[in-house]
Length: 173
Image (cartoon, rainbow, N blue to C red; front, side, top):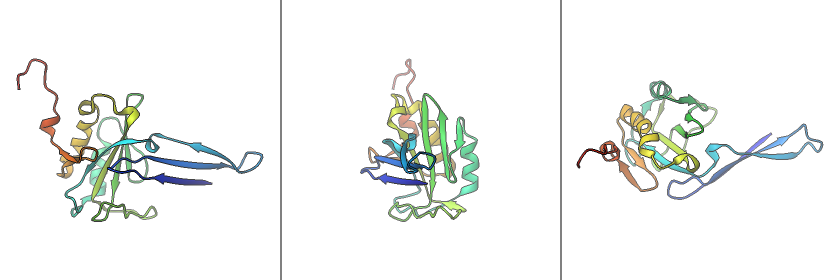
């Protein structure tokens, strides 16, 4: 048996999610084990959305095919992917159906033809010092495909591809 608990955060920071597994093979039959994975730790969050009201959608299958074709990407659930380049990089990519307020309205038992929000979660232990090199190329590739801007939930600003490009050591600008 499994019980999942998610403790929400503020300003786009997901604090933690814990899964409690009851091991039926233990002598008592109820010895709990707590398993954590990367999605359950504090993360740096980015969002790709058409606008604040999430008023436009994009076809799920087309987007999923594009994302799965990106380097180091693998499926990580029904509507989820992961940038899996361990031990150096890890980023979760969640394709979501959300309300105007940005709350998830997707039901786990149902499949969806379109999504209206893409959330990216980078656990802080994998963030490193070069987000522009390690994560933003993947994030911008997804944003460019759907034609929506990339939003940084921590800074409360939209990211521009040109502003995040690293400057060559020999260029003056």
